[in-house]
Length: 447
Length: 178
Image (tube, rainbow over all chains, first blue to last red; front, side, top):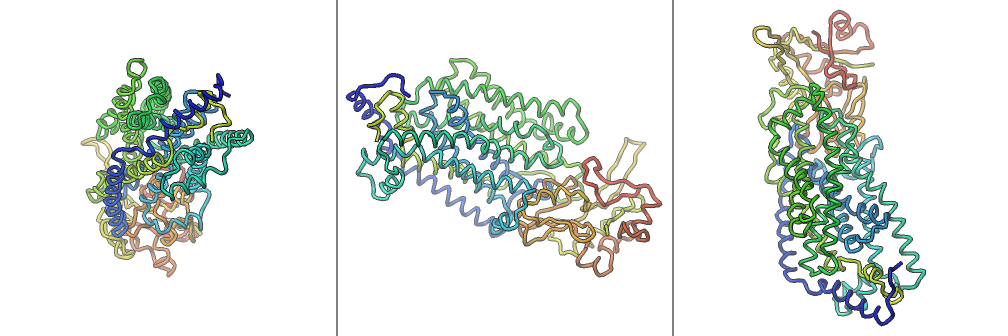
């Protein structure tokens, strides 16, 4: 497995250094309480907003007759998109045997799990009658895209959870040995998780095989989750959604959002957790190249999605595309396409731009663009129906999100950050045993 | 049996009586409507043409809304009428998004609501839907397409008509006489 095996003495020394470095943030984390407090504050505000929405109904949002899917659904698509990165890093790159992903896999898995879990909650926030959620299972009809979505989102959350927990088994054993003074409830988690890990050869064989099976299994599920999400739109007759390439278009866009999210997380963990020996400039350079690649694919699908209909300009499409290119949505549309997609991916082609700090800001821009793009896919289409909008209240003509909608859009982000914070507090953000392997530490002592 | 409706765009004066009658009959919440009137103009001055249409759910034979409903709340009822069972509806909005006619709206109580052709409250009692019976110019015709003597069958035999967005392939059952 490893390139050059270390002697027993060197192994102990090397493992000790890796353990010290990677486990330190679990016990030393400045500002942790303050950060949690901040997130809880958002939860309280968001909880109150949701209470108002439950009490008064979806009328408190700006969703009306025409724009009946608004910011919430855009947010949902974004969350599903960002969650795809777990599959991309650990499965696609992992199965291709790309070595440099080792210190990033857990970060990607954390992001994937957090976003996937909250995607399910975001969709409940959008429901008019969340109390009837069970009806989807009691009266479920498999002809409906909504049901496909419920099925694949829950499957994906389950597999992502397993893919996160499985590599934690040896790490839990290491934590039990290295940090025995942690609170009792925390030790209980590791006792449950380590599953009697003793670094025996057959244990290695089983864990590697299981991780491989999961890595393969998650690929079709992850593709399905975002393809089905796109089919929620593509299965309708509306101009702008009625497109045959919506599946791959969404999937390619998802990788852009996910890679950007991982780069931001890498930057944060590198500097705040002082992991610059593990998440190096080399990793940023590589991730920058990956971002260029996935952006190029996404731009290609964008060209197909917008310029082929724009060439023909059929009646219904013309109405929609005119509003996007030169009309009401033009500023947002071109900002998203040029400032948040074309320019960052062009800049990242150059090696000198692929440095952690510049990449952080370009990734933030890409991520903002990714969110806005989802909004632009969901909302404007509904404002351009086939039949004229007439004799309806003024508020039906446009869609401007209300304060409650904005609050309940921010709330899930706080939720994602909370999940990531908790996982990063309970476990090392970089897989200790896999790094040790890579450094050539004797396998039998990693326990 | 196949219930259908025909609206005479040449007789309609756009008074919106049908809208008010529907809102009263079906207790539609304020600010929403199950039917509505549009005026479409075509051409440029001085060669102008105007068409007034009273629109509602098309009760399509091939309804995208019934197809995409996750719980079966949207369903075909007697005579091909498309109905929503409020108790089964989870308010996901998939049907609103899928309807090319924008015939559905989110009810403030959290479910999705739409035109029922007044099936339960009027048609089953032998009455016409509220909009049809109240029309001052008698521009609407309602009945069973399978019955050659129903008002709607008779008028469709004698007049030119069109349906809306036929390219969507939904096979709508709301006809506009032209």
